[in-house]
Image 1 (cartoon, rainbow, N blue to C red):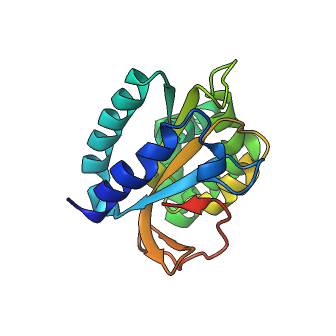
Image 2: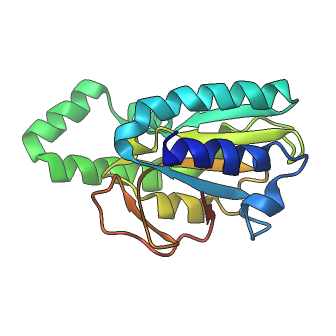
Length: 191
């Protein structure tokens, strides 16, 4: 069994199965979420394992909401311009300008933390609901997850796990997609 599968099944799943997992996944009451890192090249096997985990948690009485950051990004971009307009802007202005435009859209015009929070079902409770935040790699290189997590503070009240494609650097450092310099300022617990 790979390291990430073992951490998923033996570390994260038992905590999410608790009647109130918040204290086990986070030391902060207003940040009831954690990070689960995995090697970026294991994206598709991870997606498969998450479907199985979701089923097991639901069979134990939990409601699991899966929030795709790829879908959030697409929603925000579509609200501002068509796909063809975005590709044309990239062709005419270059990749850096396209990245900057996308960052502006999900950072200011349609804030990504708000799009995530809107997808949490009304009436969710910390005792019966869990949120999986997936497809984080879609944000590369537009938006850093550390910024998303900080801005979700106070907006998420149910246990949530952000599935992070990257590499662990020391106890608290994560390198997004294994490419960017590791950030060591993550406050949520890292699995």
